[in-house]
Image (cartoon, rainbow, N blue to C red):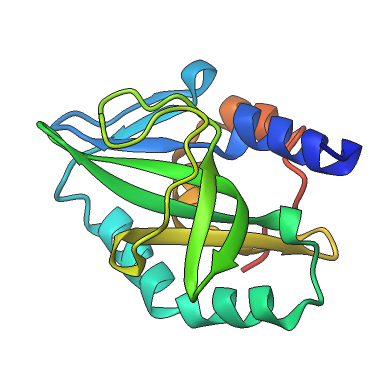
Length: 168
């Protein structure tokens, strides 16, 4: 694996791979890269809806060939008995019109995928996406919301090693 790709994957593992699991209680656990949210979280549902509606921007950027392919990630919904787990997939590729991505974080609730899997991504299950350009984050709507909910200390910890600037 190229050093640049390895660094990016490690950064995503430490920071970006946020699994949002539907639960009744809202709770954050940065050490485990696990964020839970109420299934009726209006703001989170809105962020996921915006990401789905703007997925064509991700697709255009990916298809353009102007960006490093190792800077693209897609957040996918995987159901489980208590709701859904949302997992960021990296090392995105596209084969026969379908995206595939690497599960590089250990799923905690779903049994549909496991660490190291490279599943095809159903567009209906995409809840967020991101890529970086000129050190600026594009997409990442759920990530932006989660960052907005962090304490000042948590946010400083995350931003210290996050590779992109978040602009409105």
